[in-house]
Image (cartoon, rainbow, N blue to C red; front, top):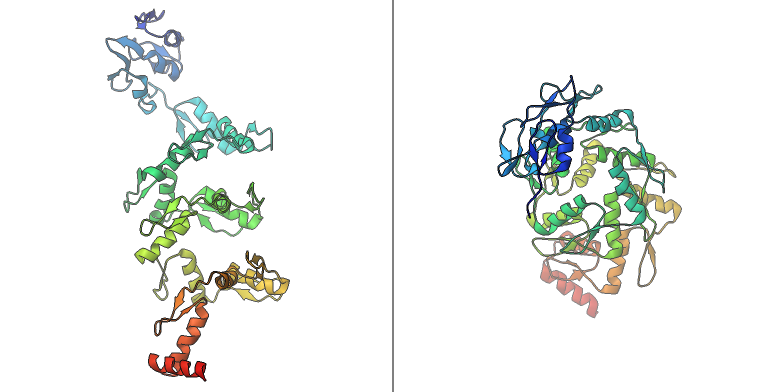
Length: 412
């Protein structure tokens, strides 16, 4: 089918699309900072120049502004190659950042003014951009239009789907130029680079602690404010961050998308997988500056360092006893409150801590994960094993003597 050709009234060039001719006809009088590549005419706006560059020249319909190289498709002419002729870019008066288009500058200035013109009709939350509002409204509607072809998981945003698909493909296109470590997203790479640069530009207004990303700061400040804006739709439990909510929801769904490369064990949380794999590799990347002892997790190192500093930042509201960790404080306070939040699913007995419940459940399962290195006897509780080993070593008994003595006691 032969395509019809249209002529520009201004420059007389032939064009395949009427919309391009319409743009090409926008020539003004005096102040014209942008120049047409093909016809040499000038225009007030950059968009008109971009459109007017679509002049038919043999088989190459589009021309680059800066180098004059031609291309068949307009997509090949990147926006960063289209620069204004004889005029500077649009500059923000607050931070001096420059933009190619006035519309981009207007959107940027809303960061400084705090203006959020787009409001959610359901909850009233406001946004700077209409696209942000659109994505937010999908939280209320439950709409997830993007689905993974591999596992069928659905997402609200195409970007989230793209990142998810890299779990299946193993693709990590973003690489650290300091250590070579690769990442799935550019955001994760930026956060990682702060390890090398020690850059933490975001400071907490409550305690002064600094963070490498604004999102990390927001999540931290919710510790002070007590805000928990993310709610589980199944059990109504609230959380401070969306990532913690997602990990929690996998308890209900049973989903375990993260698999160990060494033994195949699966996990619902990526952090749990990382800690587990360190058991195989023996990696302990966190070391104490005082004594040199190494740890698998930064939290373990933090608790250990309190031994040297004597710091106990957590205080009991009932008796003012102080503790090094928040979890130790919570367990202690249950002595005062009588709280036993952990319940056995078999006999419904209640316990103060999850570790106590775990030990108890071995009575029902018969599991005995701890074995004696002297005689091979197995125990369901590590403390029972320790007591036996201490008895043998304290009495300076050999394994044969201990077994003989035990048998005599049983048979007598």
